Amino acid sequence: MKKHLEGTVALVTGASSGIGEETARQLAAEGAIVAITARRRERLEKLAAEIRDAGGSALVIPADITRQDQAIQVVEQTVEKLGRLDTLVNNAGLMLNGMIFNAPTDEWDRMVDINLKALLYTTHAALPHLLQAAENSPRQVADIVNISSVAGRRARLGAGVYNATKFGVVAFTEALRQEVTAKHLRVSVVEPGAVRTELDSHMKPEIRAITMKPFEGITVLESEDIAEIVVFIVTRSWRSAINEVLVRPTEQSF
Image (cartoon, rainbow, N blue to C red):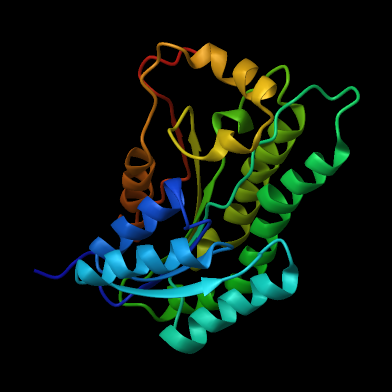
C-alpha cells in the first residue's frame, strides 16, 4: 500500500529534540524523505539512524538558521541533494520567560532570532521550491506548518516577549496563507498548550518554577501528540486546508 507522503521531501527545523524530532520521525513513517536541521549534529545523526533503521530516509543538515545565510543553505542543500521540497515544518523555538521591567534584553534577542527570524528566513528561502512542488506534484499541493503556541493566542504575565514572538508567528502565517493559498501552497499554524519538551529547560530555575506552577497536577501533551496533528494537516487531500489548530492538554483550562 502506498504511503501518503511517498515521493515527497519534508524539511523540519528544530529536529534535534521534542516536537521537531517526533514530527520528522512520523513524516518519515508516512513515506516522506526528511531533511532535519538543528544545531546539535549528534542528536540529528541519532535521529537519522533511527529513521533509516525503520526503513525511512533522512538527510542531516546541522545549521544555525537564525543566520540567514545558513537558513538559505539548509534549503538549498535539501533541494540539491533530495531533488525537491514539498513540506516545511518550522518548529525551532525558544522560551525565556520573565518580567519585562529590568529584563536582560539579550534574551529578547535570542527569542526573536529563533522564534521569528529563523522562521522567516527559512520560509523565504523555501517558498520558490514549495510553489514549484505545488504546481508539479501529483498531490497538487505543498505545505508549510508553523509551530506557534497557546502563547500566540493569549498573553500571560511574565511571558510578554515570548507572547510577542508567537503572536507574530500566527500573524505571519495568516498573511502568507492569503498570499499563496490560491497556488495550492497551504500554510498552517499549530498552537500547542503545555507539551513535555526541552522548551522550558533554558529558563533560569526561579523563572521556570513560576512558569510551570500553573501546570502542576496537569497531564501535559507529549511530542507525538503534536506530530500527529502536523501529519494530519499535510496528508489531507489538496482540496482541504487545515489553517489553524489550537490544542491543549485536556486538563489545561487556560
